[in-house]
Image 1 (cartoon, rainbow, N blue to C red):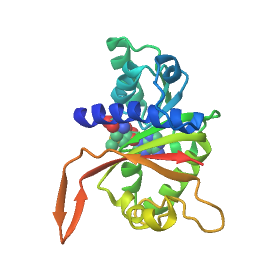
Image 2 (spheres, protein in one colour):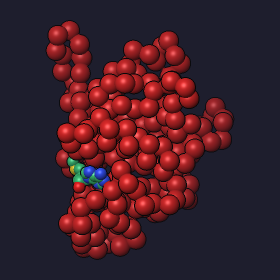
Image 3 (cartoon, rainbow, N blue to C red):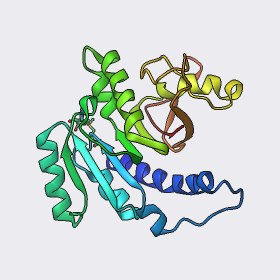
Length: 216
Ligand SMILES: C[S@@+](CC[C@H](N)C(=O)[O-])C[C@H]1O[C@@H](n2cnc3c(N)ncnc32)[C@H](O)[C@@H]1O
């Protein structure tokens, strides 16, 4: 788990290069600087211990909010953050499915929370509620970094990337909004490529996926 936290934090740092390109629409490399990162408004949904927020804080992000619907998780995260000198991180009790948050974020992280939501007997409906909330909370041009068990989230994308130029569509396990009437609010950006893979039935898979999506 700790290793995944480091991998996610480093991946997020690497994305800042990409988004510098996106925002400045230039092809030459642009150096990231701490001032740029500290301007990002960051939300971690279902942050539990809050350790991922601590890691991204070390990378230079400073406007950090963690939410969880468990008061116990909030208490734990707050006490760990105080102990470790990250008292700038804000923690709030909030259910992402009925969120009370009234601001938008430029970076939203989710490590395992959508997985947990999907375990509910009403998982399919709750996952759709989740995507609806996330699409409202993520500012246009913002990034969602989602870490999930398995790489199901990527399967439909992998099939379509060539044909559709990267438009993300899925009706599979995670119910990411499909391109039906309206264009999908999310576009695939990048993914962690260092997780171990395995081969089953002739297909290559992974036990975990960390994927970045851009909010259109
Ligand atoms: C698998 S844990 C992941 C914790 C943390 N992100 C990590 O990487 O260690 C899932 C977390 O999501 C929280 N959670 C589950 N459903 C939620 C919801 N609807 N709204 C907010 N938090 C939720 C749980 O309380 C739990 O802390």
